[in-house]
Image (cartoon, rainbow, N blue to C red; front, top):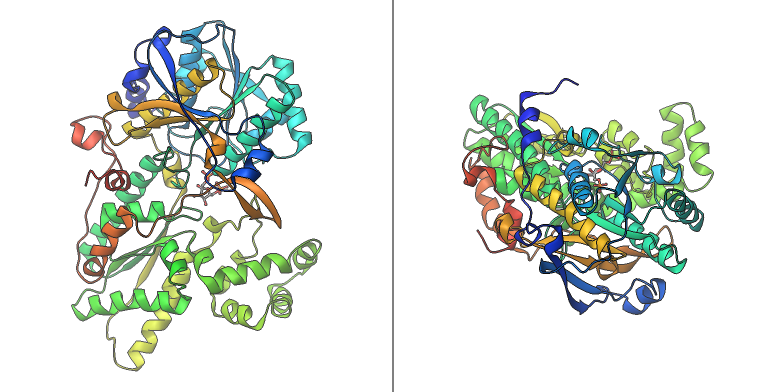
Length: 554
Ligand code: FBP
């Protein structure tokens, strides 16, 4: 295999574990905490998870290891979108498993949860796993978005586990995947299979967090990668002074990624979807808000700027989300086939005009044709609109352009507006993990094995105190049911992990809010540069601004 000089060096990097996991496997004991209850809908969640609900939070500490010395055969699954550090979760899991007993076995189910159902796997050994240490990507076994949710699927999963004598499954995923992990754990417990299920919190979106989980892995590296690129664009904009850059960044619904990038780079504009929803902003109001900045800067001779657009924003604009809802209903059942069978866009357009309410069609008609067509792309397996495929950066620049033309007509704007468009998403999901993510992920995997060894089921691997040096991190576990509530999904009430959106009264947003009016009209750009892996601590072991602000470190 051809590998880059950086990869050669990264393969040698030794990830840092929390102090309490550094004593050697035989000196890690459990301290049990309080019994837990779900964040909401306690009675309903309890009834749905009679075997796994209400268990105690736990932390690991130095002491005599009292876990059962049985042989462990563990299966690991990478689920959903890639996030930097996934390989290190697998490496940490493997190292703890082998350090405990060289006879232990780690299976990797390929291509996401479907690998478990199809019994498609590989068995890890040192030679194979060593090529992936501290690298980005999920190519070690691949990932997928198959939803594990039906009784039939669970029965197949139980059969596959029985066939390989699997004692535990580790699911590395986001909120949906860890919801599935909890349901699978309950099924295994209810059917007396003896198979444990442990989850690990992954997603670059940063929306799997709560009072226990300080951040999901991958958020740190992905936002640093995007911020480097945005900083470079800002410097280019400030050099040439002739373009307005509209940069869409990933984050399916929450705007944590956009906010973190704004905190890192101080652009002229950053939309925050949660605020758009809270203030019920219309497309016209948003374009007015951006156009105000363009006009104010133009009046000072600055016909350039940078605007960050979170990819999920369209679903938070009330008129737009109403439109998406109507489209979903319009295409329900066999209607989708009928629509897809229409040969031309003209025929499809007439079908849409007939199917939508007057209000929604009014919104639809104002959109650029490319965006209109993107609204009809296939939904993901969870029924979500694939917002990464909607070019909202082009949508907003088109709306701003139209707005500025009106201003030109009434003499309130005399500048030049030349927009350029970028989308930063996939670029950041497989970057070499930052030292933070390399350490955090390795610790999550190592810790997941300790939870298995101590017999826990339906738990999430938890590493906290993350704004401090790794030595001070705290390792433990929490029942996944603690994070759950009931939500309406596809017309049914379902138990799901509550998604963490940007809190408008939280410190990261407040910090941004206090400064954004100045950033909108002045040029206050900051240039974070590339992730540093080697060198002084203050550039190599930086946490995100979001975490630093949340923990009162900034
Ligand atoms: P996860 O929630 O599975 O981690 O994925 C998040 C994400 O990266 C979003 O930011 C993005 O909208 C989506 O995945 C893209 O999905 P896909 O990889 O299927 O195109």
